[in-house]
Length: 224
Image (cartoon, rainbow, N blue to C red; front, side, top):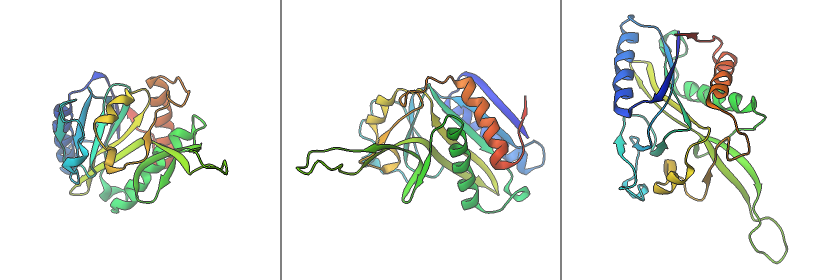
């Protein structure tokens, strides 16, 4: 399979067209599987379950309807996007197991930076426990815990070939999340590696994504 890294910012609609063409070629036996790492200009995407009310500021950034699962999310510079095109007929024909593997990939990558990424029932994506929240109260006890999202997942499968994938916040402009209710989830925040005090550059993130890929999926993609 192929491991591709794009420099600069890749137009969203162009990326979707490339993915759709590659999915068709994989399905036809004309191309290898692909993991494509890139960044987008600042934009919002609306998945197939998006609720229009969750777009709080429709004039803030361009909005693109997309065929992936999920709701509204933000993409922009400083966020590592990984579009994953795999033939599940050659692996495991189980979409839930595939999504779980993507979650494991994000968790294993974060573990390389000594961060504990976690799943949460009823909340898509990967979360960081930021510790207890102290909000008033006469007894001085914490009132819950702060949990921030650091990784998003949205996939589509066509004739058992996957596309779209994951987004890991490295150093994006987190203020743009104020324009949406990310993935329809309120009362929780969003974070990034840099926001957590880890000034890690994208090249190092890519190295660790490749290492974690081999750990989770079993084969390291070849470079291009």
